[in-house]
Length: 104
Picture 1 (cartoon, rainbow, N blue to C red):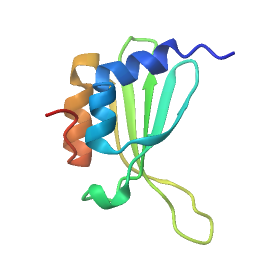
Picture 2: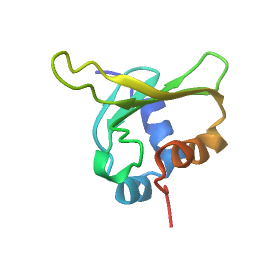
Picture 3: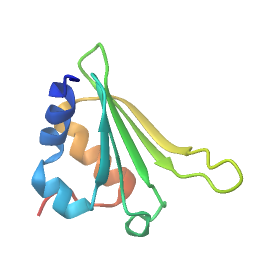
Picture 4: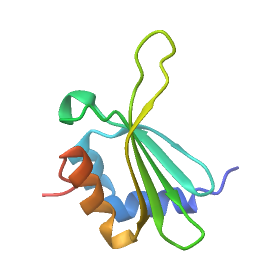
């Protein structure tokens, strides 16, 4: 069984259940140091559909915002990537790039 400690910590730092309710995030996937999820594209002004948050060795995060590709190859395009993001800034970076609030 995979160690989901980092993924659970990232989700908690984003706001946990309130984050899920406010953003509509779904289809979560994780690895030892990464949390990825999908967003409803109709909610984001830049049509961001995917977010990948990776814990770096420096104990900061790299947050990648993706727009799903179109036919014929469906390759996702990187809309923005933010490096060296501290845990306390995750919500701010997410809101700035997607336009979605993470809590009330």
